[in-house]
Length: 184
Image (cartoon, rainbow, N blue to C red; front, side, top):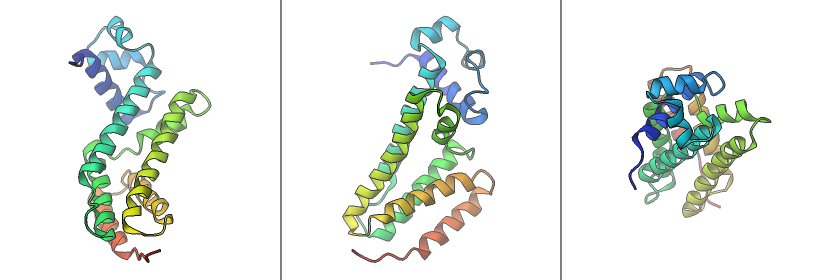
């Protein structure tokens, strides 16, 4: 089924605006102006701004997990896996921007305001951790390594907001080299 170009324009422009300025700072009028669509067009495709946000988060999650699936090396050893996971995450940051995590921003702005949105954000982080932990089962390493790798990825996202990305990449690879893993 062909996706509506206007619907995609709304999602694309809203995502850019939300990522750059936050969710509450951007109103529907700004989205419509950037997307070049009329209010009736937006409300034909979405019931509310919050529906747009949910769609963006789900779409962004799918794109991120596709990238990880394509770029992580599960066929070699644990160190190759970790390096490929970190590289994949850094590739995401480089392609999508160094303005932090859109999921954490949504959680911060909608906690206590919209449970559906905050639930999507929590589930995203849990899904990431579960995927890493499932991948690690292939290598027979301690399960706690999954949480450690999640912390590294979150830290990379955070520090990339204030540090030059090339420096972040170099530090990430140095950190990866310092990881010592013992088999279970």
